Image (tube, rainbow, N blue to C red):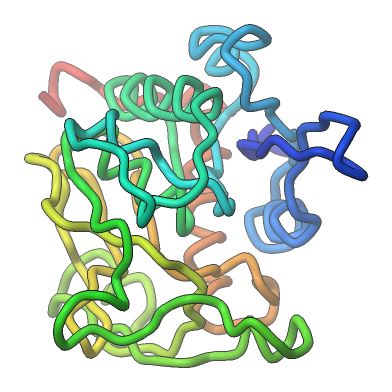
Length: 257
């Protein structure tokens, strides 16, 4: 049996009237084709699911990207216009679930907003708009063009020498896409920034001393994941960790503490 991998969904209004929970098809395809798991879309509503129920059902979680941002109240800052749109229901599902998974050693993979959620869940803060910072580039998705053009590789990410991303990718520098407005301001106390864009923007992180898989990235590896030489090893490693959890091979928390 394939491991069941939960994909955190986002809230949408179809035709501006019908509320729905959904996740991008490419996330599900990446879970199936590169991670070897069975994708299961999770509704981002704390009235529908609890961390305990989700962890009893899934063997790993992908915290996806999404247009709404983590509300700054979650990291102790006031809301401003620059912070953009929010999804407080997703905040209330994702942040406690991340903390519970990290503590238990259940595998998580954060992508874009999910990357930011991992940092916030572990006590970090965010910049509302990277492109407004001196010396930083515009990391937002191009407003025009095809999906192929929007998800095209746009900058390098350089990893720490001999760090987990360097070991996983077999290279210290890779090319990635970039489709985000916010980014890490202060890393959480246990967040290790393991990769940066050329302008200094954090792009790859993990949780120090976590008993399970916690690699997260600011770019979108779900795009063409099965064939991309950077995306595939990331999803394969995550899928292998989920398969271990599914098989009952759980971390020794006493030894990991």
